Length: 267
Length: 225
Image (cartoon, rainbow over all chains, first blue to last red; front, top):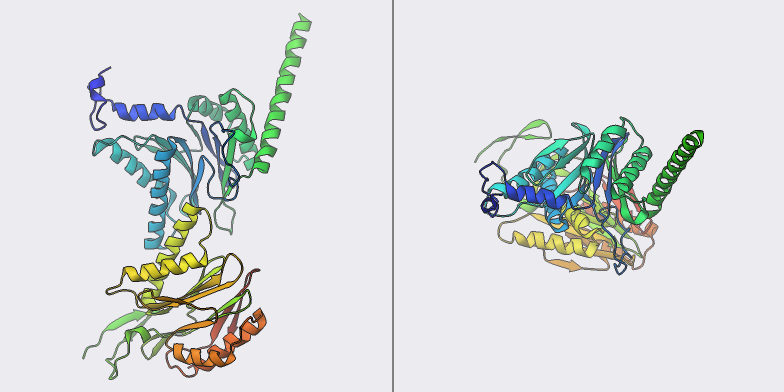
């Protein structure tokens, strides 16, 4: 409809829509799911990894605590989970890193989380209004800590909008995931409980069993008296959660089968 | 002649025009010494911070551990030292985020040299020492002038107002392949001897010894003048 108005990002359609922004959002809707949630003592990020190719050289994948495929450190107190075009995301991540370091250079303090989110959102907005450039096809989940508001979770969209959340999902099947979070996320879950919930949601939305190759976890943690610390989970740690999540699911399914048989047997 | 009031460390200070003009490089005072040992390295700084003849602070350390195996020592004008240190920390943090590894000491030295040369005409009045342990555990040491000319050495280097005195003192004490204990003694004694010959440095010194295991820091008391 009105395709004449979607060639240039800077133009509204007669109905008042920005088609390029909507197409960007649609692109993100095809990208693997990422979930963020507030847990006790931290913000948990969980992401579904794209399907892995057998020929990928993964020898050095777990050597650092700075990035894996979808979860990336911006600074010591800030990390993001990515949904959308990876190359677009890398550009914005580098910009975010530079911006946060420039803030520290000027003010000798770590950049407040909302300040950084606001800046990225403004950059994204600029690409919807200025210069006939296409928008960034990326949504971020930001997990961060600052002394002003403590632990915080934000998301930002290609249009430049952002919000603070207790739990949020972006990417493929984000609506389903968001509904499940609304139903099952509780205040003050432990990080382990949060990971089990995230693994359950990721598996259900992908219509498969949770597996180590498909999930990434990271916890932006803060305990009293020590600085905020990002911990990107290693394969062994992910395996523990994945195994437990799968076992719980198996038990639930067995229970359902049992109840079903009893019901039929009763009739 | 002129006079002005400046706020230094919380107090008011009226500057009087001195009869003998001091070089800007010696305005803040301070010296650094670094000595190589066997798979270890020492760096030592005095404690004085001054405003020409007026001593402002007696606990101003001039070296900084900017990485797990890297020290950067900055002598010269104090304000430029602080600014340069902030820039170095910025660049090292960015390196770590992008490269996902710690910045090796050789790279830090090269970077500091480039930053200084970037202000070739009218720049930082800073005379740095970059030292640390290389990936293979061997010590690395270089000192630079204010526009980044670095000279690598496997013995010892000194910068600051007592630089020449330090070189003389350490020349007679130094021997190659020292263990960390001997390294400490040579470094500390060399610095203490040189500090008494320099009006702009003093108030004792702090010596840090870096080995594969970690860093040990010791403070040495001296003449407080």
